[in-house]
Amino acid sequence: MKLMFDCREMARLISDRHEQTLEPGERARFRLHLVMCRNCRTVEEQMAFLHQAMRRLGAGESASGGEGGGGQPPADQD
Image 1 (cartoon, rainbow, N blue to C red):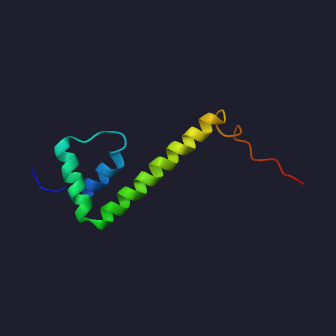
Image 2: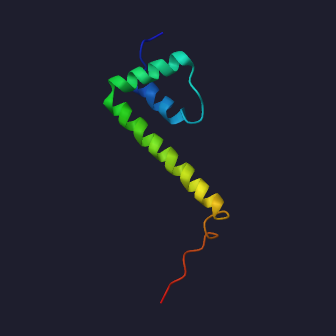
Image 3: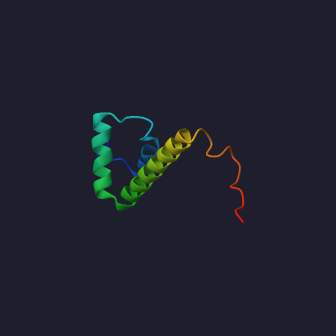
């Protein structure tokens, strides 16, 4: 077993992270790589932001009753 994941493995884990949990050893290797690699840390931050934005968007749509206006563009206001 390697001490750290490589960036290619990290890209897969970062994208899958919000759908599945990592084993404790994998989680430690994941965090170690993030400490050492600025690029992967940036990708993780961006992915977390996008995931949070999508959750909020989904919550806003469900609170407004579906697809946010039935898919119709707003009427022109003269």
